[in-house]
Length: 179
Image 1 (cartoon, one colour):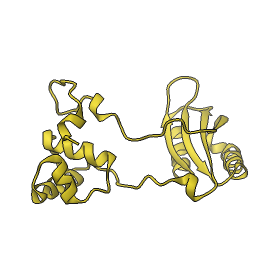
Image 2 (cartoon, one colour; image 1 turned 30 degrees about the vertical axis):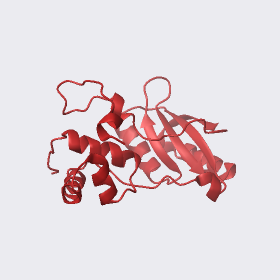
Image 3 (cartoon, helix red, strand yellow; image 1 turned 90 degrees about the vertical axis):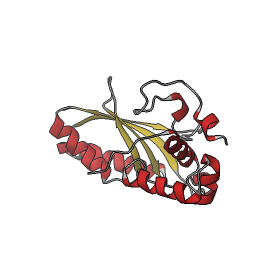
Image 4 (tube, rainbow, N blue to C red; image 1 turned 90 degrees about the horizontal axis):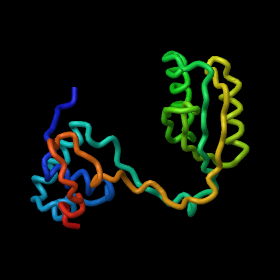
């Protein structure tokens, strides 16, 4: 079991900074959050061990690297029982081109962001999923991304209430970090 860690102002600064700039060195991070390199390293290590970081990754420029098709795929299931949803989610986890999948309220059960090498492969995967009767997929709708007007650049941490806060003063995290 992961150890619960108090998220004090220094830990908030560390999380808020690394969340947007994961490639910082420990020395650069320590300077940004006003800690010694040793204290900063220990805090980052404790935050990682406590499970506050899922992963650190690079945001690559896919347009510069390869041909691809980005698409949102909407799935509506015939059967919304827990076993049916588990089967569907398990199958989705097997498809690396489906990068994200979220269960929704409303007339669509799941929506996923996907990245395929071309339309043929996108259609092939959608048809393959549709053909798997055990998944009980009623309807699949694809929405091809024509242009990325805004891309995910991190969660709006400065606008969210931290779970450890008893009261939230709305102060900007970036102001606390002193970037």
